[in-house]
Length: 259
Image 1: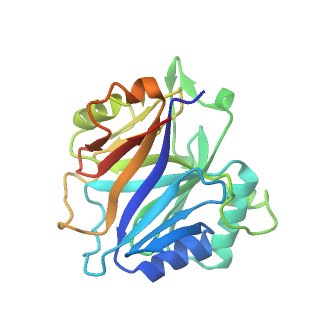
Image 2: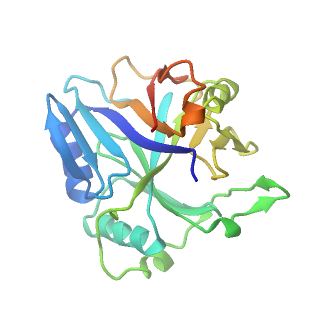
C-alpha cells in the first residue's frame, strides 16, 4: 500500500483562456469548476487536481529560476503515452522540449504556453529498473520516438487514469530541500546525479526531484508559476507533522491531506 501520493498542484497564470486551451482542449483534462478566477481541472479518473489561478498582471516567470522545473504526469501504459504524443504532433504543438529514456521510465518534455515545465511519462516495471548494487541508477539516454509512436496508430488525450507522478524543483540548497522532504517519509533514492537528488517514499524512483540548475536565480515577486501542491499521506505519517500547511524551501505552499 502506498503511503504518499501527489494529489494537487496550483499554478498562477497570466492568460487563463490560453492555458485552458492547452490543459483542457489539447491534453484533455476536465474542468471541475471555475469561479472567481480559479479553474480546477482533473483527468476523468480524478487522481489529482490542477488549479489555474488567474492573475492577468502577473509577470511571466523567467526560466530557469528557483521554483518549478516541471511537474510530471504519469500515464498508465506505453500505448497511452504514445497516443498523447501523437496528439501533440498532430496539433503541431510548438513547446516540445525533448525526450529521454531514464531506465526507470520513458519521458517526453514540453512546456505549457506560459513556460511551466511538464513531463509526460510511463514507468517501466520495477524489476526492470537499473541499479548499481543497491542504489538506483537513473540515466538520461535518447528515447526512440519512432518506436514509441509505433505503440499507437491513433492520437488521444491524456488517459483517464493519468496521475501526478512527481514534481521536480529548482532549489538553492540540496541539503535544505532534502531535509524538508524527509519529514514526509521520503528518502534519497539517487544522490549521485550531477547537481540533483531524487527522493521518494514506498521505494518509488522519485516523488520529488531537486536540482541546483537555476544557480540561485530568483523570479520577480508574484510571477506566474507554482503556487502550491498537495501531498496525500497515510495517517501515521500525517500525524507526525507539526502542521498540515507548510512552505517548501522556495516558498510554495505544501498542503497535506489524508484519511
